Structure formats: C-alpha cells, structure tokens
Length: 579
View 1 (cartoon, rainbow, N blue to C red):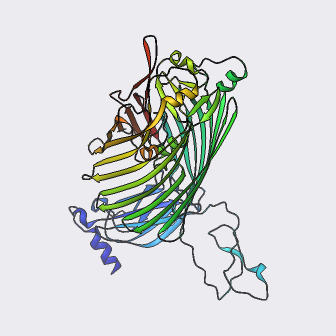
View 2 (spheres, one colour):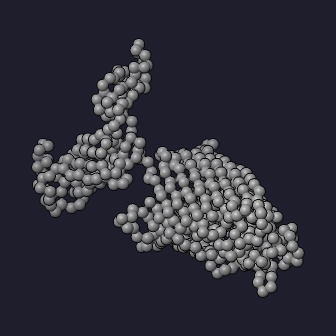
View 3 (cartoon, one colour):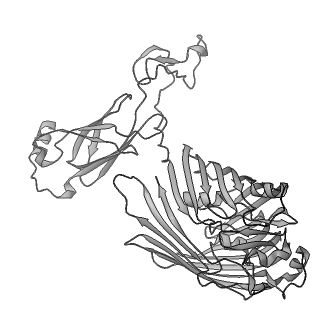
C-alpha cells in the first residue's frame, strides 16, 4: 500500500491547484533558546512538486531568527533532518503533511563539544545511596558510558525551551523631550544609541546613551533592568547618569561657581514593581532618587504608590499618589526617551534647584463600547521650584541675576517661580474610527500660574509675587491616523489654554495622554528597507506650538520684551534606525 501511494503521488498532474499542496515551517535553536542561523534542513519524502521528476529530497537554510519554511509539498509522510556546525544533528520521522495545511516543527540542537552530563532521577532510593543516581555521557545526546536508572522512575524529555526574543539596536537623531514626560523640557535635537538584550524569556537589559548638541543636557548614559515581563508582577531598576552644562550663555562670577555649573553631573536611580494582591487588585510601588552635583549637592527622593482595582472587565478604579512620571510606552524609542529625562533645573541665588511635582488623583477608566474609552479623574498637585519658560535675551532678566538659567536651544531663559498647589478635574474620551484612525477629546480644570502686572523691583521674592496661581481650563482635541498605503503615522492635536497662563493645567494628565499646548503635529514615516541593511528606518518630524501662541509679555528692557509661555514654538526632526 505504501509503494502504491508513492506511485500514485508521483503520477499526479502538474496542473494541480495550490489547495492540493501542504506547507512545513519550523524553528531551530540551541539549548539556551538562541536561534541558530544557517542550519541545513533536509526534507525526505514524497515528490515535492510534480515537475521534480521523482526527486525525494530537498534542503533549505534557516534565517537569522532560526526559522525555515518549505512550500508546495504533496500530502504524505516525511522525514526531516537538521544539521548545523558544531551541533549534533537531529532526525525526525513521521511528519504528516495534509493538503492546504501548515505543519510546524521545532528543533533543539545540542552542543557537540559538551563532554558530560549528569542526570539525577526525580525519586527512588536504593542501598547504593543517592550519589549513584546520575548518568555520565560522552556528549549530551550520545549513548551513556555509565548509567544508573531507577526502574520505578520513568524518564521524560522536558519540553523544548522557547527561543529568546530578538535583541534590538537603535541608532537615531530625534527630538529632545518626549510627550510622555509630565514636566517635559526641550533639549533640542539629540543623537541616541541604544541596545536591548533579552536575558531570559521574561527579563531584559537596556543600555542607552544620548548626546545633545545644545541645551542644558549634554550627554547621558542609562541602564535599565526589567524582570517578570511576561508575568503579572513586573519589576524595573534603572540608573541614569547625566553630564550637564548649566553655564552656557549665563553671566556668572568667576571662580568655583562658574566651574561647578559648567561641569555639573546628575543621576537618576529608580525602582518600580507591580504586584497583584488578588485577581482584581494590583499595587505598584516606586521610588526615584534624583541627585545633582553643581554649585551644591541636591538630592530629592520621590516615592510613588498606585492601587488599581478592576471593578469588572470594562472598568478600573485607580488611586495614585507621589511621583508624577507616566509609564513609558512599549516601543524602544519611547523607553529611551523616558530614561533620558532629567528634572528641570533652575537657580536661586546661584544655587541649583530641581523642579518637583507631587501628584495625587483618583481616576476611573471605563470601556464604554468597542473602541470607545472614558476616563475621569480628580487630582491635586503640589509644585515645587516651578520652572517657567521665557523667550528673550538674558539682558532682559539682568535684575534676576543668579536666579535664572539660559536655554540656548531656543534662545530663551528658565525662571524659578517658587511653589504653588493646584486641584482640579480631568475627563477624556477616546474613540476608534475604523482600523486606522483614533480621536481623543480631553478637558482639564485646575490652577495655573499667570503674571499679574509687570515687575517694579528686583529679586526672586518679587518674581513669585508677580506669578500667582489662578483657576484655568484647557480643552484638547487629538487625532491619530495611519495611512495604510505608505504606513505613515500622523498625530495632530490642538489644546486651547486660557489667555495669560504660563504653565499647563494637570501636567501629569498631559504626559499620560501625550498632549501639548496649542497646535502640534507629529509625523512618523517608515522608509523603504534596503537589502544590504537588515533594519527598519523611520523618519520623525515633530512640530510644537506651530502658531506661536501663548507668549505673554512680562518684563521690558528698552525695545525688547521678555515673553513667558507654557510651551515653546519648536521644529524638530530626525531618523531612527532599528536593527
């Protein structure tokens, strides 16, 4: 019957339809789960295609991910052999191919140089003692030369280990601060180099470095370790070191102050872990330590606690207190952007200060219908050493000598407006419009700083009296679209802010929803891939405050006026290459 089946298969007409054929795919990896590239896969069985004139074997080579695929196979029984350099070959019989179906096989090849392996049975005790319960082999897959086997124990082969996720490498020139940062600055166009290495199936290590040609942040080096990625209790440890230059363009007295501000160092160490107390309650605890060594050492410790209760599959009630830093996105680019962030720095009497936001809120997240999501929240913010953006020449704030920094990236200054508190409400509704468009409408109400008259005396205390909190509203519309033909991702948003406000309302919500004041446009365009460069290339353009709105006059010096604003007008762009 077997011979007759083979003869019948060989006589099938060459014009058979594609549905008569089967398909075989698979992966090849080593004992540690690493994919094996260049392994030879030999298939033996019925005639592969009617035009092969009776040939019963074919071979393919695995790709960089250790994968292989064999197309147009006639139904029947096959044998498969896998061979790789310095690896023991593997042979598998009885592989059944069915018409119109895809079969999948996974191979794990042992190291041919492995000299011995000890195997201890799971149970069973004899008078020889436990020391004899092992197997000594000449290699991991050849016959044993000395063996003890308990007759009651049944040997079983463990399931093959899943291959590790692929490593990722990123080289890019991208805008400075990301939209996810609650207190986002703008350090200009920067160059980024990052490497993400999986350590196991549920842990990885990220090393990243960045360099900014202008602005306060010169260079940074970041390391982040994650564990329990695939489980429900993720843990992350990060350490970021920044080399800062605070004296560029700043009139400073000579001596130690100038040197210490010109060669400042910053460090951010953070810890975050999420644990599920029950099937419905998750608790996230985090701690961040910010350290700055400039004219003096500044250390800020900021804890964070978040408790999320899943009321039902569509509703989550969450309480958040402490450190206000939204979680990073899933992409490597977003993770690197979050790691490169450092708290905004201001001066008071030539002594550095770090801006802080202590955020508390109660939020309800509800999935109303398929594609429609509602979030409402009540929050309270405590701002310390609030950094205010100004646009103008440093001579216009000479009366605040020692109490401002220069932002050379945008030809502006950064002022310290002191401390204030804000409480308010936030509501946001997002709606998916088809497969490629998503719209969001958000409303926030709280307190924001606004100037009250022009200064008539000097000193930081006078500046704080001139900038007082006032009740403010903001309304935002945002549309994210993906063009299927070109794979272009376009995000455009407009946020209306009450006239005269120089800070934003609810900065934590701004970062979480990735919103910016006034008109903003972001374009991400994947570029064609080249055969000689196995990488994904993406062009990025980011336009913020495109219409130059929100600039409020504050102080005049001759014919020039210092303008304060909640967001600079900026144009940024660059490329990212992902290997």
